[in-house]
Length: 196
Image (tube, rainbow, N blue to C red):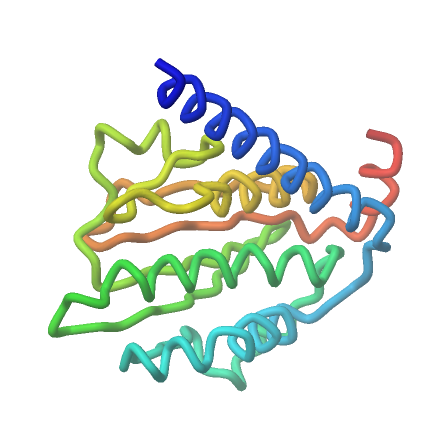
């Protein structure tokens, strides 16, 4: 009986620690200023943090459109570090997901409309099962083998995107795994969030 109680206490302590860590993450960044940043810069920031993991896992990287395309010079108003962290999380998840595949690739695709920018991160994986698509953005949920030690990555990423008045969704039409970050280009975004 004492072993079971100890196990429960350990689990509760672990959950409390994770909740504290989750809150600390947002407390740390909540006073960071919004700034106008080129999409190219955010992607470059993210890839610098993922380059070693991509290389070690021998995962090919594709960026669409090409680096000299004008869409990558589009400015958005964002918290640069936070938005980069969203992409880092998606890219690292993709790297983990394709490790066992013969064909290993990660693709970053940027599309622009009149008022929005979409950044999609795809990989050569087989997609997210329909049964877990509604759960995957919840804290502590993980599809990784053996369970993620935290299961907070997508939950944090989703919250960051929402703070930017954007969306983070799974693309159900893709034959591969594809997450799409949709963000407004509105130059008044900073003021809107300040009033939220």
